[in-house]
Image (cartoon, rainbow, N blue to C red; front, side):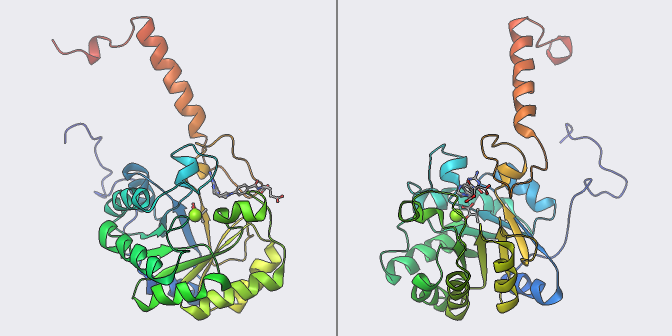
Length: 281
Ligand SMILES: Nc1nc(=O)c2c([nH]1)NC[C@@H]1CN(c3ccc(C(=O)N[C@@H](CCC(=O)O)C(=O)O)cc3)CN21
Ligand SMILES: CC(C)C(=O)C(=O)O
Ligand SMILES: [Mg+2]
């Protein structure tokens, strides 16, 4: 393609990350080796490819897509077919990262048969390597059923957005150390290969991380977790209305989108775009 700028002399695109494929065993080995894991969510091809080529260890196709992509006020309406649609796109974009797809609300809670069937659909129809579900002790039997079907499954404890109506809202910090530790241990015992800790005090996350053999991946859970996860559009600054304390914006893409869009509109309205350099004779 002639439109691409020349590559640096190394022949490698600048900042492009190469390395072996992140597998579930390598992901677990990172904890033993003391290597931190960086996870980000993505829902589309270009963002997933940019994260993959930038060294993100795992790309999560989160059911947060209900809020971030669909503009809804919760994750509850997201369907298994929507997760599979986005999961297939993201898995195809990722050459290196471990791709994990969230099981959405009511795709695993009915019974173990439903959970295994839907987890199996995700691996068969997307090319992702693993699934994630919300829960610890309450989902232990479901985690065991999925893991026994040779489907790697990640658990998710602390704040569980799919339980927002039971909890009375989104974003409540979970502070009961005994409950969180029991949930995490039940998930590990049932065969989860890793666990997300969402919105829990740092000291509890540290205790859980030291108590488990499987990697803990924190979001709003402090620095002691084995890895971190952020919603991709949050870390890029494309979700300006969402500013919890735990979020660091590594870019301000929303303001760049808006200023670019304003400039484009202004130039079209003024008859300045397209100029001669953008015009075929
Ligand atoms: N764009 C986006 N990013 C996310 O991280 C995310 C979603 N959407 N949707 C699903 C869940 C919901 N999440 C949330 C929602 C609200 C807060 C929140 O309001 N947190 C405040 C108050 C916490 C408290 O004091 O109890 C905070 O400052 O962390 C945090 C995480 C995380 N997830
Ligand atoms: C925030 C992460 C852990 C998640 O579950 C999601 O994006 O849906
Ligand atoms: Mg989720």
